[in-house]
Length: 296
Image (tube, rainbow, N blue to C red; front, side, top):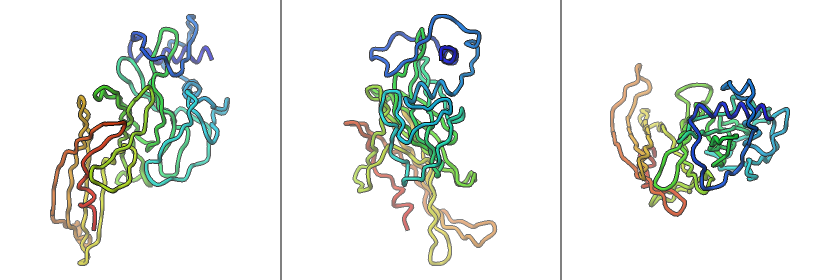
């Protein structure tokens, strides 16, 4: 274990020098001795060290987890699915590709360990903010992320008086790029926990759900004359200071699918900015016009 953690210290060194001690105590920590091993000069780290640090009940040496795993703080690794409850895939040993690393602020690092996978291309597991200290590493924030498991990008932004994790990832059906679903999830870091805060649409009766933004959507509705009413929306999320904005570009066309190439008539093109507010532990935003644009 000492050799593994020495490697861990070397890996974290590339993200910046140590920072002054934080006010809050670490959630969990791994300390190593002051001696230096030859392998500490490499930037490679066995996946087992990360899984052991982040997950309390990893089964070694196979690196599998039980049906209800816990993160290093002792809390159950659980979260709301990013859609209808999907089918869980059989448990298999964890490997390096189940980990995503991203640099964080002030020399910290973000890590997502995907310990449970699902048939819809999503995965669930602990996401953590890691801080390097003089004799090892500390977990300074932890929570559960359930999101699409492909092309994962993590970043931590300052949002007012809190920090905000933005998890950008995608899942694809049948490996076809046009069938990919890309989502951005917003997880505030509150009292060292990444929380799946709700996002409410103002004036809408739609059910409340975690703050997830689908970056591209399409709706095709066949009309009485055989033409297709095709609606598309593309979204971008901006975080600036204490402001979050969801920018939406909506487009509606009427298309003749029998033509070669397909013939389309532009019917509507709208761009709107939806400001997102954070209050009392939840997000809220004006209702999107997409619900009306995508309807029959």
